[in-house]
Image 1: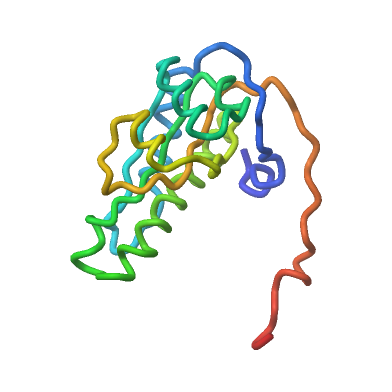
Image 2 (image 1 turned 60 degrees about the vertical axis):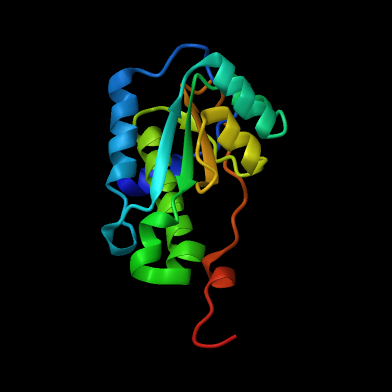
Length: 173
């Protein structure tokens, strides 16, 4: 898909077909996440791929029972790993860069999923400890996003966006 078209057509998909995501498509989504830029090329994040129904159910509970969580046949859980940036960047690496790294990787995965005809929705509302427990992650890892992925069973209209003139300030504001 042409890049501008990809950006224009990406939507938050919350209803998915029950069929699984093909292994080659999931691999391509993960490779896109792996290609994301990161501070110092340290890739201060971890990704957990979840397809097991029990673990998906536990993640849905951790995410306040959002229906899209149960509908998606696959989920990617993105964790910031502060230990990977602390040595080089100190507090800034711990408090910011690892979060940015995980976020950028998730955004790349989401765009690649769209490019492959898959749907996804960025989930950021969840209980950190419950997400860690659901996937067996160490407490030093910080959950940043859960990305439910699947074949879309809906085609939502675009949501209103602020105009560029409203977003961008020249100089000072």
